[in-house]
Image (cartoon, rainbow, N blue to C red):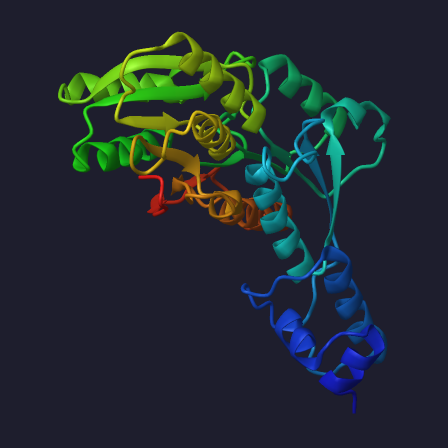
Length: 329
C-alpha cells in the first residue's frame, strides 16, 4: 500500500508537506510546481486515500510591465502574487504570469484569468479581446464590469478613515498628504485624496496643510517629493504625514532623516498597505494593512469557483483593514 512517506520520497519533499498539500491545508505555502508534483506523484503511485481530484487547470495572471521589478516599490503586487501562487499550488493547478504588453503573443486558451492592477477602459477591452474567457477575476481598485466578473479589492474609504482616525486620536491637527499621480483615469470615488477631503470636511479639527502629488507611487517618488517640499518650505513642519503607499512613506522617512528630522518625535507618519518593507526601516512605519496576500488568495479561489461553475452571482470582496503599529506614529 502506498503511504504518505512513499509520495514524499518520490517528490523529494517532507511527509508533512505531502499530507498538508493533499488535504488542501490553507496555511501551507508552497510553489505551484511543488504542489503539482505532489499531486502527480500521488496519482502515479496510486495513493488510495487521495480524494477525487479535479483536472489540473492552467490559469493566466495578467499584470503590468513593472509590477514585479522591485520588492520595496511593488510589495503590494508581490504579496498578491504570493497569495495567488499559494492557492494555485494547493489545488494542484498551474498559473502563468504575463504582462499586458506581451498578451498579443499568447495564443493559448486558459481555464481562467486573473487581472492584477488598475487599467484604462481601453486596456481592459484589449485584455478581453486577447484572453477570450468568461472566467475572469479583477484584483485592484477598479473593475469596469462588476456585474459580469468577480472583483477582489480594498475599501479605499475605510482605509483612509482608519489612517486619519489614528492621526486625530493622537491629537495631531495639521498634516501633509502624499500620493502618486493618477495616469489611468481612475474615477474620483476610487482616489484616496477624494476620501481624505471628505473626511476633513467632517472633522474640521484636522487640517490638510498641503497635498503633495508625486510622480509615481514608489520609494524614489516619495523621497524626491519630500526633498522638494523641505527645500521650499522654511516654516514649521506639520505634525503628521499621511503617505498613500508604504514605498512613498519609506521615501519620505529617508528624506526627513537626511535633514535630521526625527520621525516619531519631530513629525509622525502613517501609510497604507502593511507591507513587510515597513519593518525594515528605522523607525518602523505605521501602516494600514488591507491584506494584499489574502486578496491574492481570494482571487485564486474565485477563479477556480468560476471554472467549476460553483458560483452564479458576481462578487466584490474586500477584507476589513487594520493598523499595523510602528515607531513612526
